[in-house]
Length: 320
Ligand SMILES: [Zn+2]
Image 1 (spheres, protein in one colour):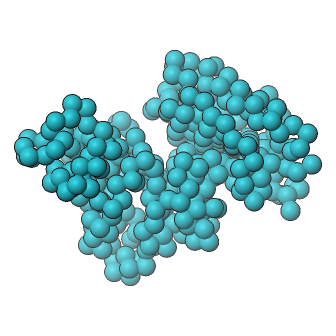
Image 2: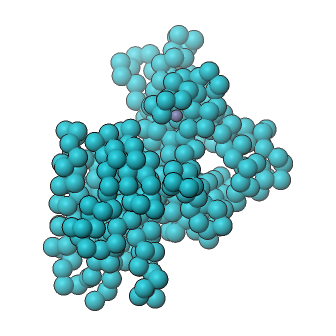
Image 3: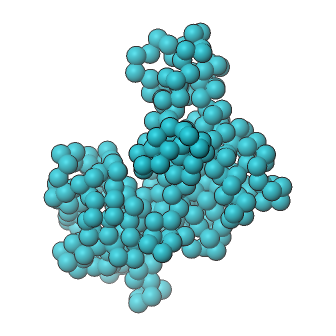
């Protein structure tokens, strides 16, 4: 029977699950809303219910070899433990791998969602075949994943790659992580809204003034119509991201920087500013060398990354 892996991407809004074969093809997928009652057992039950549905659907045709999960948290990937999850605090200190291994009886791999997205893009997306790359996910926050010599950079505890928490303003806006002035506060979807509000007084002519609750999409749409306030917001997004990435280009000399996540939809409005800022700050050679790329996998980056990491887990034994 053909072996496949189960992969889950747990987000603050949706729990997505896919059964993925060794070539990276999704053979079955399902999803549900992430339980929002703040109870750990509700999230665990939700994960079991999407797993059970996959199993029912594929029974008799495939053998499940491993389970990989991408979660919005700082994780110890070696031990499969969630350390801290700002968006889903009920997951704090949860020994994920032990719990699911004991119930499922197959190897369990746990990874931070942005790290998993980096692996997914490197396996099947924009940075295929690239050995050194930086991956940035612009969502509610700013996630990061770094691949060096073909391997995900994890650090001693597995917490490495948190690009979103590089400070770009020494006395800047407070960040959810406890620090201040992190790039996440200047380049995420939530930052786009905050920046638009804070610049409103300087732009009485802006078409966003008539909006009660500004969304990142509205800022983008106004920018595409030439709204000066919105263009200034995306200039700042590009500039601040460029400050963080310019430093990383000097440190890591990557071949590619891949940018994904919902707020990367504003690419056309920020990418020139980002590129200029990298060129202004980084050494000429690595700044010329690095290619800026848009994510190709979109929402599937995390799930494919989790699948790849899970399939690696049994690769040594019987995967050919
Ligand atoms: Zn931070």
